[in-house]
Length: 324
Length: 263
Ligand SMILES: Cc1cc2nc3c(=O)[nH]c(=O)nc-3n(C[C@H](O)[C@H](O)[C@H](O)COP(=O)(O)OP(=O)(O)OC[C@H]3O[C@@H](n4cnc5c(N)ncnc54)[C@H](O)[C@@H]3O)c2cc1C
Ligand SMILES: Nc1ncnc2c1ncn2[C@@H]1O[C@H](COP(=O)(O)O)[C@@H](O)[C@H]1O
Image (cartoon, rainbow over all chains, first blue to last red; front, side, top):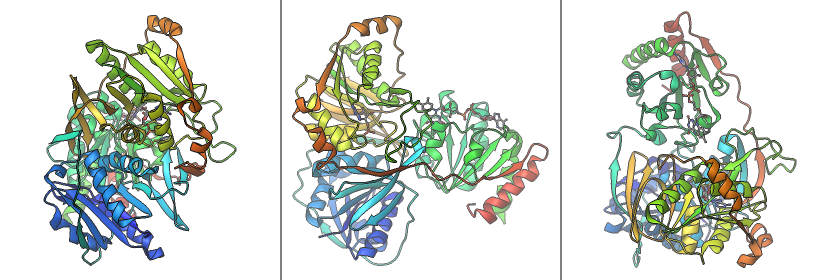
């Protein structure tokens, strides 16, 4: 049977937004073909979340509810997805290209003897073959690729690129049992970092600082702007290497790849390795005193000026907007 | 503690990318080739492991003739052996084909851990280590920023959104390194001299029992229809904020609210 299976990622029982975006996209793609869409949800104590996935387009949800699946494991989760694929026999399996999705999709693909298309930002159908657009060379080029006719087509979709669509409906829940769950690499614990603040990889809005911030104390100003906007604070590698902010905030080739709706780059020159991480943001704003800084080439809006004057003024303006 | 490091040889990250005449590959003229930056973390981790616990570091690369320079660089930094599986131009980007070749190249060697980079820059897949682990029937951990190896087991920290996962696993295993794991060393002059005397073992794909033409043909799992440059972006609106930063900030806020509708 043709159809699309979507891997659903959860943490502590709450389903991640990227997975719902992937499911929404699966529904849109399948609608044109009249294909069924199913989801697969591994975890512990998560059965109650399953039926609700119907609202995002899944007609069936394969659930593996097991204490050994509470935390992620590449081997355990791959077994679950492969088992669901064995039952549903999909033409394609979608993942969200999060840390988990990107770790898992290739392991599933290899288990099924196929390849995989990673971190896709555009998707079309040519017959029953997906044609994907994916950034390569750090976003300096795009490859238009397919799985050379191999099925299932394993594809991970970059978070925040594909729209989330919520409708109505409940899904049929199918429990996957008879799993052996031979897990060798075991996640012992998840240690939260950054006191629960929004991670740049998941944020809708990011306010990022670079070497122009001059020191760690000035990041407080960015944090204030970020808090007003419900945003995460990002950074260039120069700021991270200087020790002003933790590496988990770094955006770019050796940091995180982000696709927020709004990316505000403050005192960041726009080196190619930085652009690699944020080039697919929907709206880019640059605040920089150098009118020739390369960041202005990719910016939709920019202010040429001293960030120590512009950012406080912008904070006041945003306060006015939020109060209105 | 014997370590295998998988190294991929890639265009320098500062390279200007142009599309080649076939419309599917980059134009390689003027490109400087380097050891993929994440593989430097993998190599450094391996060197530190054998320095502490004894054993050897073997670097394996599946790549065309020019990749030998990358292997020499790894030898100069202190790797003991280099294995060059010659080829890879036709399978570029096909992670599964690459994983099959690497699996065949390492399976009969002695190793406790296979270290990879989390991502080969250029094709930007982040897939080969996990596929290799599956093909070798080994556990894997990717995105590793901390690694402690003991007798037959290891603990690793893996960076994910919002925190780190602490992973425990038996050896052998595949570990994919990311930034933060260590500070890669440079090659010393002595290392560069010593590397000249170390052999680079050349291996043909066919000697591994694989058919590269088939891997790139009937068995291919990744096909590039086209390689394109990103569409040129329209010039953005730039506001002069030197004289009156307050007015500039007010104008920006207005544009973000009313025009872009993002705040
Ligand atoms: C292999 C490799 C991987 C890399 N990975 C990454 C990565 O993941 N992420 C990343 O960001 N970089 C990465 N880099 C580094 C990258 O090349 C740049 O060095 C880095 O991005 C520069 O950071 P920056 O823009 O903050 O600093 P700079 O380039 O020094 O720019 C600072 C900017 O601040 C402006 N400025 C200064 N003072 C003010 C002021 N008062 N008001 C307004 N503007 C001001 C300046 O005009 C300048 O444009 C990588 C490099 C390599 C080689
Ligand atoms: N051709 C290759 N030869 C050796 N190792 C490779 C090759 N391609 C990928 N790898 C390894 O797999 C890692 C991730 O690459 P990728 O999955 O292509 O992003 C790299 O950092 C290398 O460690």
